[in-house]
Image (tube, rainbow, N blue to C red; front, side, top):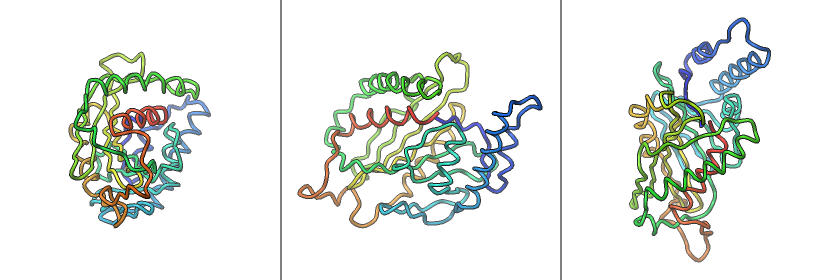
Length: 268
């Protein structure tokens, strides 16, 4: 997961970079990272779109990007994510959304997972405690992959917000608090504030990456963006055709665990 520790201001891309400035004794490797991150943000600024605007999300949906938000497309967003030390699953990645206000310190990772139609009929039987334990177990398994790739291992601490599924809009929200293994409990914690919009062929994931001290203020961003996403005609959840369409292997609760296991191995 990314703990969004830089001030992201696309109006002045030097702002986030200056906060990462190295001491004169910084190693060549650290300097190379700084230079690449600077170049990645500059590329994102040039290629991106500032709200208010309508953003086409591949062949599936439209996002009405609010004012003071900035959308970075796939290629440039991938470069930024990698410069921040993350792995990107390119077939799923759509782009990044950042805030342009001086105080904004969040990133929203936008993905579309073409996994098929996800049945939600078992959502009414959702057991949040069982799901949390499954997510912790999934993180333990994902840590093996993280360690093999040189990333710090993660520890899931608990819910920031328990899962809530709206069966009318087919939107799902849940949020986890986590930290790097070995860090003291007093350290700043990372937060993945996960929102999903289910569709006919798969789902959009809008994952707000922030910190424990800022999630109270930042979570409204994730909910606003989720509400601003509209599937194209024929692509919505209600357009499902049982005789022709692919159905995902998992129902909603089991799918949530599988998704977290994959994503926690990629982002920090």
